[in-house]
Length: 277
Image (cartoon, rainbow, N blue to C red; front, side, top):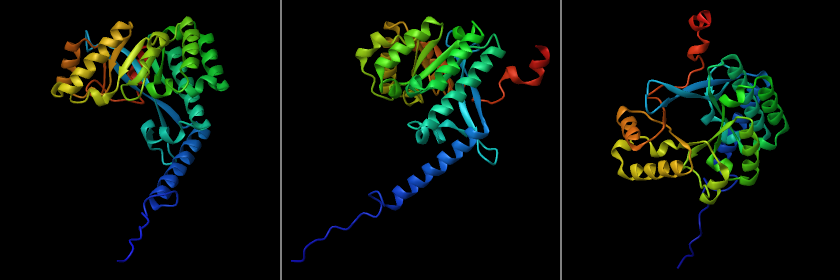
């Protein structure tokens, strides 16, 4: 009987075509982001977060980072954030997002804005300097700034995150736990974190009006937030049916394309509104 010889999988291993393609894609992404950061071709797109009690009223906006490639195309964070998250380049992008967000708050006294950050940036000197400078220039900025930390990021260094949050909250800053349900939050930390806002990940929200499992899970997350005195935001609300279910379930705020897509030209930056101001 002939002996069976295992055949190497050409798509597995560090030298596989797939691994090479992924590596080349990441290198290309890093080069694109690094070039945009160097040219300061970075901007924020603003998406409204609506009040559930009156979905025509905006509770706050989220400032979502965007970069421009060399052809001028606007590239959303989902297309590059994974490649830069663990690198210093990710800290540079966090710094620019915070810088632009603080500037928007300073220029628009009626604006309340959330900005995404990584827990890794807490120990990054330039990011901390940017935050301190922004809070020092205008006493009202801290009260209108929300810092969003993803669930997975917060769990990297929970003790450091807790200490940072306590200090920033004394200066008026609020915190949102982003993408809740997508990671592995240790519930024992909930009594220590003191997040002001809990944002429920969109995977539980899309189509929720017809998904009994996600209805149960979302109601449980709302109950957890209420127990810890956190406001709740449902992400990725895309239909009227989903919005109505969430309102009936007791959600505090709603965010998604049903209410408005992220835009780099928010209402307060449009020429007509500038003239009225």
